[in-house]
Amino acid sequence: MPTLTLTQIALLAIVTVAGIIDWKTKKIFNVITFPAALLGIVLNGLVGGWPAALMAVAGWILAVAIMVLPDHVIMKRPKMYFGDAKLMAAIGAFQGPGGMLMTFFYFSLIYGLITTVKVGPLLYKVLAKPSNADADEDIVAYNQAKQAKIPLGPSIAVGTALSIFLREPTLNLFGFHDTTIGGMPMVLAMFGL
Picture: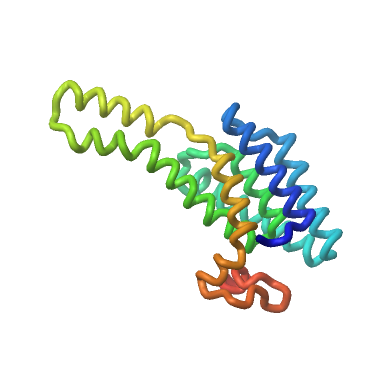
């Protein structure tokens, strides 16, 4: 188990609180996300100077781009609300672009698993039954489950924890044995950043 830095401990505390609040209220409030993003940039700046602060800002910008552009700009059918995007941006401010990409990877796996567990059995019932009254009830239940909002905060929190605790094994799995190039995480170098 890796030794946690003050920055990682603060990030884990923030995403845990945000995940719990999102679970209970289905909202992530600005009073959490904006100060968290600022704290991430400041802590990185204090620990690593201007280069680290700039990487924190780059992580914030990359998170906003990943979370907002596809859903709100390209598809113009927002299924995600901005609280989730602002929380991911705060995570980018703490972890920089490479850590944010790893968090997004784990978040996507966790959220996909939750969605499959929630909707999958109902879809199976709909597909397995012949057309009759029972099947119609199952179709209604499936459509309701499909449209119900699943809070992203808990998945983001778990994804963040996994990205912190499984950083080295994940990088090794993808073939990044040396995690830095000139002080930059190898994941960034892969994307030309």
